[in-house]
Structures are given as C-alpha cells and as structure tokens.
Image (cartoon, rainbow, N blue to C red; front, side, top):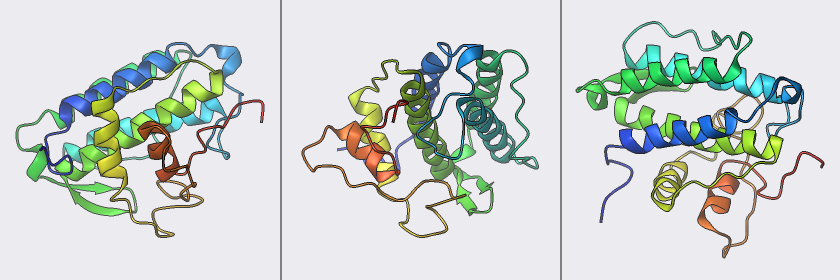
Amino acid sequence: MTDRTTADLRELHRRALELAGGAIAQVTSVDLDRPTPCAEWTLGELLLHMVSENRGFAAAAAGRPAVWDSGDLGDDPFGAFQDSAAAVVTAFSAPDVHDRQVEIREFGVFPGRAAIGMHMIDCLVHGWDVAASIDVSYRPDPELVAAGMAVAARVPDTPKSRGPGAAFDTRVPVPGDAPDFQRLLGLLGRSPSWAASC
C-alpha cells in the first residue's frame, strides 16, 4: 500500500489545481461579493488569496523570496488563477524539489515533499469553497480525496495551525460514516452542509 504522506504527490497536486480551476471558471463578475465558507472572505477575496498562495508557493519552492499577498486578479480572475497555477506546477516540477527546504509563510520551513502536500489540500479545499459559494458541483476523485485525508490528518490541531489567521480553521465534527471528502472538509474546518444562503 502506498504511504500517501511520503509519495510523490505532484500529479495529484496538479489534479487538485485543475479541479479548483474548473470551479473558478464558472465564477462571473457578479459573484465576487458572494459569501464563502471562509467567513472572513468574499469570493473575490478568496480568489485573490488562492492566486497569492499559488505565487507564494511557486517562489518559495524555487528558492526565491516569497511575497505571500502578491496576487492580482485584474479583470480576469480565472486567467489570473491559471497563470499562477502554471507557475506553481512548474516550480514543483523541479527534479530535486522533494529535498528542498521550503519556507511557508510564518508556519516554518518544510521539506519540499511536505510543501506540495500542504498546497494540494489548500487547493482541494479552497476549490470546494469556491464551488459552494456559487452552488456548483465539485467532485474530487477518490485517489485525490485519500491523499488529501492523509495530509490533512497530519495538520496539528494547534492555534498556530488553526483558527483566525491560520492555515486552516478549527476542526468541525462530521459523522464517522460521512463520505471521505466530507470528513476531509471537517478536518480542515469546513461544515460540509455550508450553503451561501446560510
């Protein structure tokens, strides 16, 4: 059985970006003020965060100084996301990326392999945030969900990693017999039943 915490996650990471991009492609300009499961962000602010994270991870993985809030949506949020996604995929494609030391925001320095996993679950769950905000279907495949679960289970349940301003929100209880993706959402602080009307 593959250990998903040490496996090469680059192809799954690319698929997470592609899935999130599919949701973002359906966003229109009138949607940008909609609420999201990230209570502090409108949809436009969430998209700006996603583009910024893509660019930050790309720079950090390439060994360049990362500016974590440098995203710009311009008048084409989907195009901005696609450009930033291509940048982070390129950075993670380096042959020695798994052995690099990557500084992620204020959270510390991590092996490249761990940084890829962190960004993968960030994309996977924020893609759901976008889809939930505009009420469109979002169906990650079982392999992607399994990899996300393995990475998310290792996120410390501490104030530094969770809560306001942290990488993920406080865990949300989800029934033990819930589908795996709903359990993943709960692990990372989302209520699977969230809807824009609530």
